[in-house]
Image (cartoon, rainbow, N blue to C red; front, side, top):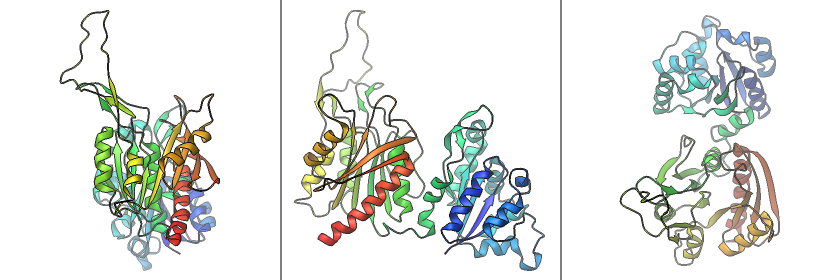
Length: 407
């Protein structure tokens, strides 16, 4: 059991904190709720007290004999601020302590996690951006807000993630150690193959699923290295970040960082082909009737190469997970192509999902099938990309234990 301080700042998303409180209590943790003074306009103290089983106050002068503005922070194993408004983060970044919650944030030496929630314009304002960076530089874990419906008719980045996602993202701090001591290398995003200094061949991958996998692996206690190819979302806090651009860059990065890793998850969308030549200057339209002819050559099959080289290099990861983005056609289903790819690549596990212009790429949700080498079994998962990532990491945890036992 952990002792947790749940700070709640005054935003309409405070109702989600009630659900998070229930998840924390159901997991057996002691939770002290510290709302800011205006939270009662959204959720009353009676709700917090009923669900936490503890007295709730925002007044720094309540319980003066116990010096609560210091004691609660000193006793905490984790401080969560959900939601964290722009105002609260500004105060925390400036080191202000004018109420019980901000005083606790100054006094604690426990890990601090904040889940911001606000309108898009506030989230993207330079002041908020600077405050978030300041807090991250001090070691505060900031859970990036989701994109979706906000208060009123507004929609965009700034929405508080669902309580289940927040709960999952702090499992490493709450004792989920399924992959403790495990080194995991993850590739994410989409490669870009340059045509000239301004143009490239690419794909629709946003990197969201790879980032979610990194978050879920870190939450399970793993030491995570993320090789990122043109992410459209921020990389998660607490992972080692390596950047790559083209398939050849990714190839080099994987073979540089894979030795010594326990698990390799090849989630990046890697271009199968690249231009045979790269022009040194921008390709011009010479006349209205002609167009350049672009010759393509195959890119290396990174997944197959890593698997093949393990026969002579024991430093390469013993457990490798591939991803198959399939569309299916009249010749076969997505699963048909996935099973054929698993056999062809020789990896231990393959995650198959259907993709398209409006499926998976760039979306916040995903639907997958997990296939295993030497088995006809499969596991299906659907939901947010973090929920899907948690299932994948859980399957890796189960499979690696069995894999180690066989060895």
